[in-house]
Length: 272
Image (cartoon, rainbow, N blue to C red; front, side, top):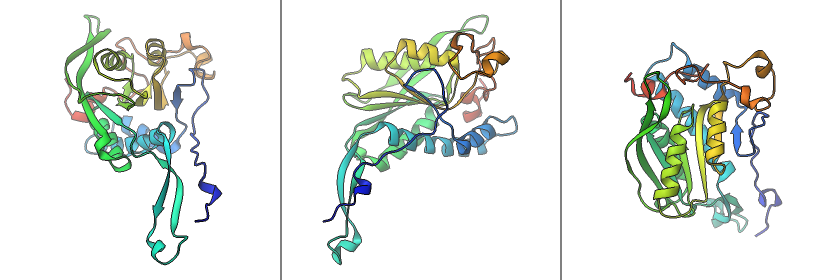
């Protein structure tokens, strides 16, 4: 078989914005996804269009994660033309189908996004090495509606995470409390050492990036959009992360601005 050098080293180049948040943070520069996200956040968008938009965005996001974060393996595939031509064999670096992966459903905003990612991984990887875990978690607030942590009502974790790529598909990275607490659970209570932890967001704030990166510097973060809408003009005119301490994306109730409102509420049409 003659090998085509074109496929000896398959690379994927990510389109992302310039920033100063560190190498583990990836904020996409993707007009297609930004357009869908803007529509998703619009005051005029309701169910069932919301679910369709989330499906489209997360289906594309999981493709990015697979291309960027999952290992490849040299594979030879016998095509239908091999019956007629000895050259009918395709050899290339493809996604390693035996890479273990875990999708974590952070109920309730993360339930549908996690299912989308879990379903996609089952088609790319050997389904026997893919699983979905579940954590019932929500923000805890004080009398002034300030986030003081999270409440974990329970979790269903299906086993070891040894050598696994663990995904946290959570639409809004606001304060960081949810992701930090979920990572604490996996690092302290779950058997095995993960290959990597990857947070997959629609929107993140500078406050989230700072807290999550400080508490879990190994966390890899992907987002469609960075929202720092309450920052000064000087900050908004600068490369993100240049004045990190001055960047503001959360209002007094610690919701994201511009943002999209509470995604747990709009995804489930349940405003409690």
